[in-house]
Length: 534
Image 1: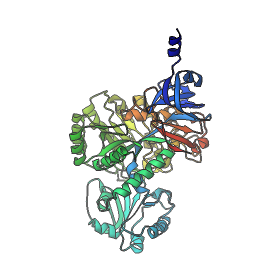
Image 2: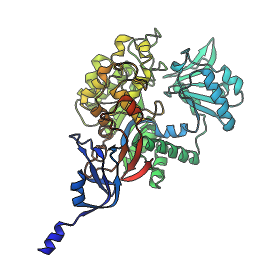
Image 3: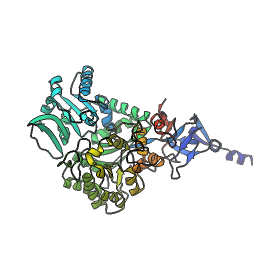
Image 4: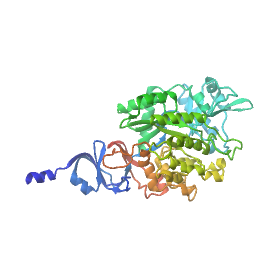
């Protein structure tokens, strides 16, 4: 009898006991708990402190001090690798004029005197005169140093003559899916979409040391924002190998869902190797690019731009290219994820997807952005199980000028997150950083409140297409995991799942807009190990 009592009182050993918290588990019931037990990097149990203390004996304890715990945020669409490299170039985000950019460049050039002068983040829509810049002043300031300055969305750039010469660009050049802009038969330096790549290809590649530093800077910024997984959309297989190597060494702790770019070498690599899956890396998809961006008028529209008659944008490749890529990806059993912004771009991709998917399925082919959709095309998402992967802050960044581009009627089908979510009953959310701010809290605001940081417009931008708080949190956690085929291992705090979680000082389910914006991450944990803390 004594032996029997002793065995009944034996507690299960654990590594970490977290208590005194409000834990949003984001399980199927969207239940809350006050404590959580972790062992070997996974959740053992959630519940009340009293119940868990009776059953588990933990090596360490963490008092959350009444704060709020959520599953680690998953950014379903970002450019993690490029973001890291961009942290070592001139930051032009938020510049309010071309003159302000020139001043920043001169200052940056003094402390970075060698090689190409690179910068990113400008947006002419933020300037008093919303016209694209030209290269004359760049030629005067930097006659002997190549300069390439990429627009915030990556779909346009301004280059000086030295950079244009390096790429062999001449006035009158014609190319598919891009534009070398001229005026009076002379190069302006403005490059749209595929034309940007002609110059970008001449930029010397980063060294291994620069890459390692870039990824370390990137993950530190992500951890500080509560991100524990990022979908890196559009990588070369060599870049994925670098990420994998750094993860294997323990130097890179960020979990990455990597999409390989649409290039023959990447198809050859992954088809030969097969899907790659570790605890930190998942490679099973390809990123294809249908059209450009709305801000640079490269998005492909069914009818001309309201503010540029006779111009409908363009596809970046012929339609038969997208069809042939879809066919081989489908036959090989991989995931296809296609960038589509305009209503014509979305229709082309939806029609091609439907041709191969043939009705409901669980292949989770994604359309990245799904930004402007014709009313008759929404149902195609649901009919063929196509996943719209959206970035809410695109709506609050573009809302100031979207109607000028699209017109009032067509704008109704833009940034329609609720309508898109209803097609399949779920929707993954991301930021598209560094195109938008890295902050998932701004994602939350844009999704729920549909307002900018100042609370404009009153009542929200097209508020009927906002998501609820619960839907938004799911979109940043469990639904983002589902879009990556990872919902059984992450995205919620349930028994057997990875102990990726964050501690916040605000309750996102109750907080006002300004409170969400001021939310602080007090701890970020990956596999139960702290990777960031205040």
